[in-house]
Image 1 (cartoon, rainbow, N blue to C red):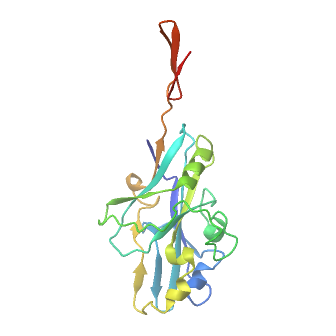
Image 2 (image 1 turned 60 degrees about the horizontal axis):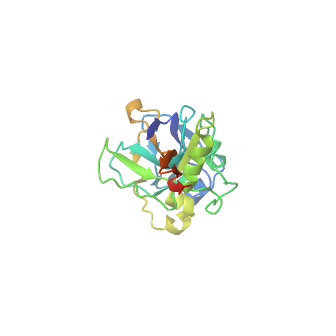
Length: 237
């Protein structure tokens, strides 16, 4: 197994566009690239007229790795114990250096909002990120077969493994349905996790599991016959 720390992991967010949370999600570009020590913001913020939708983008350099990847997971470190919205992990094509223009264009398949049926998912369903812990604890998200394929496509090359974290209201386009349920009081939904603007010991980590090649053994002579083991099968001739 290899554990690769993120080359970049940051949040960009939209705090203007329309008058609803869905309006923020539907914006083409973000307003702000978060480079503060507040870390990755995984969710949304709502307080009266202030509505903010967060999307986080991560990339990992696999140029020094080799082999066939059989499983991929993502480990993040908590910065707080806040409530959180479930997250989808999506394939990303954001630049190596994240920009506000990556808010929509940085998601593979997104050509407008909503992109529920267009984006490439690295988790088959939303992850609840529930490790049951507090500040400084880690939690791991297991990624799907599409993520494994992507890892094998970029491993050993200069192309980075890239993904985006998008909350379930944003991805499923359910903000309008839920807007009436939001109270006008301060509502921050979404935990904070360490980014590449925090302590490097707590950067997000991509975990790669590799397959083990089966050895070919033989031939072995058995009373004039030959026994060979090829790809796990016994051959006698």
